[in-house]
Length: 162
Image 1 (cartoon, one colour):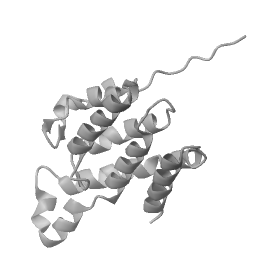
Image 2 (cartoon, helix red, strand yellow):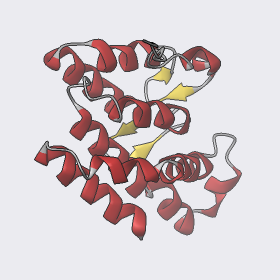
Image 3 (cartoon, rainbow, N blue to C red):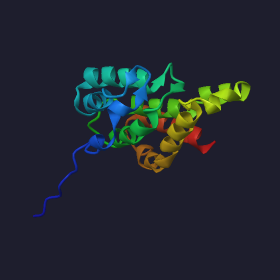
Image 4 (cartoon, rainbow, N blue to C red):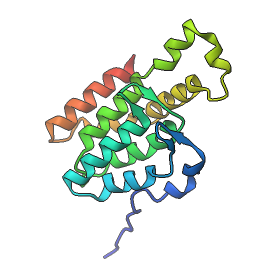
């Protein structure tokens, strides 16, 4: 009998320079702990961590920051793990990120934003690209038994098809 070795979730977290990038609170250094709590926590812990993560990388449900694009691949990784208790919430967060155009829309009226050292418009576009990059995951999620996951997957797929 052969055993297959499962890769532990979030093993690549250390490859991102979290303390050097920003989220809505300042340093993004706490994002790995929040992702880990989402991955390994019970339902209440995971939901709380996801809420904190949402406030840091997609504040108000539509304002992304520098750390958002770096966080998105880990969100896609977590949504694939059946044991993660808040997968539908993660999908809704990914949809919010994919829909985010706050900075881009503002830059139309205030083009100086494009020259600002903190290029929020570029961060927003990067975050949307990161969500689009793994949209193939949705095919499997649409076959889930959990209707909340199927609904959230369908909504995200609709957003990404635009």
